[in-house]
Image (cartoon, one colour):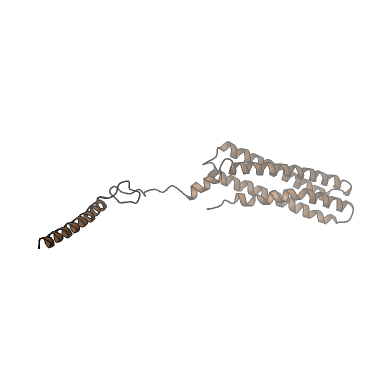
Length: 205
């Protein structure tokens, strides 16, 4: 079966989103305590960029899969899932902007801005869970995967037997088989009659 790219890519933003809040809080605290350089915050920014990009790609591939899924699912369910995905990607953009701002702000307020980034990232965890749950309902409750099964296995056409053609599913046996059975019985009866005639001739002798 030709598997769509959407269910493959969606795992990346989900995984990174749930990891980010812990990393953000750890990096923010370590930088504040001068146990980590300010340049280390670039790792958080890079992960935020990766989350936003993969989330956007997942959303775009979802729109491509929408055309196929509409064969078996009502559009309103697909649009609900799409709206939740857009809200999640929007939250990752906000977190990314705040992360970049925190890198250039004064050290006195950097920590508080980074805490705000952590809060937005926690909110993104809820949003990505809600989006993933909605996608799971499309597949397991509404049968979105069935659209691809129908696409890969179309109903066969032009395979019906022609009239008069012998098939194993025929409800009536052919006339030829019946005639053969009757001939076998006739042969058996003639042999018995010959044996009886021989015995009678011997007795007369």
